[in-house]
Amino acid sequence: MLAALAHAIEDVLVPLVPVDRPVALLDFPQVPNVGDSVIWLGARAFLARRGIRPCYTCSHRSYSPAGLARRIGDGTILLSGGGNFGDLYPPHQELREAVVGEFPRNRIIQLPQTMHFESHEALERARRVFDRHSDVKLLLRDAPSLALARERFQARSFLCPDMAFALGPQPRPIAPSHPVVWLARTDKEAPATPRVDPPPGVLRVDWLRDDDTGMLKSNEWLGRLLRRMPGLHGLLQKPLSWTYGPLARERMDRGGRILSAGRVVVTNRLHAHILCLLLGIPHVVLDNSYGKVRGFHEAWTHASPLVEWSESETDALERALARAGAAGG
Image (cartoon, rainbow, N blue to C red; front, side, top):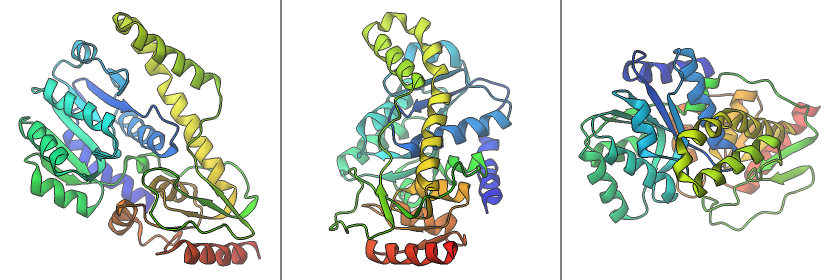
């Protein structure tokens, strides 16, 4: 299944991204959430296999229109994938709308996203910005997002798996130390249901805290310096961008250790589900607050023997403990 999903990414993206002109990759995830870093690393892996080294990378905090313009020429601008196309995470949506408005003559590709708007006004604003551009491609990673894009946006839209699958299978970093790890959202996408207490044998965690590493400190120091002295953007942007790959890898490795601590995982995080697939970890999946996980699971991963779908935390934990018992026996 993993190979098929990686091929599906290539089937969509290879015809869209020329290798004979510059390529920029924007919106590095300047957050500790592991999933966003897995997406970034998948995009870099796809580009590396094509022999493409991005001419410009940035986060939403370090984006400079002038800096991008100096490097991109007639090239292709890639906007990182994820679950922030909409109004839940305004800084990322503001970045993509700014780029679409400021670079009307460049091809812009939105890498695979879930599209979700809670505000009609925000959706209409995005539609107006995108519809003014003549060469935007929207990649969506689930059927509801694709339907919304095709209904409301003039840009060509494509169904495409999450970029994380471009990484391929990953080695499990540690042996399990708990029957079940329950990686449960503690942010704005957590379901609005009463939280079930973890039963014995279940370690409940989230992955929203960075390890205190030298790479993280370097990234944060350079970012602060750039924000204080924007006139030094040309000097500081490159060393800041050098921290992106290693920092993203540290975050993915941290997520891999968290998940690998369980013989079985329960999660309502989409990229905990995806990373479990890459690591070969059996797991039970629940939805997030608005259907993102369900849509992706139904589109791409429902046939995997590693995953079971559940409608409730209690049921999911019971299934996971039973599967962990069988695996441990």
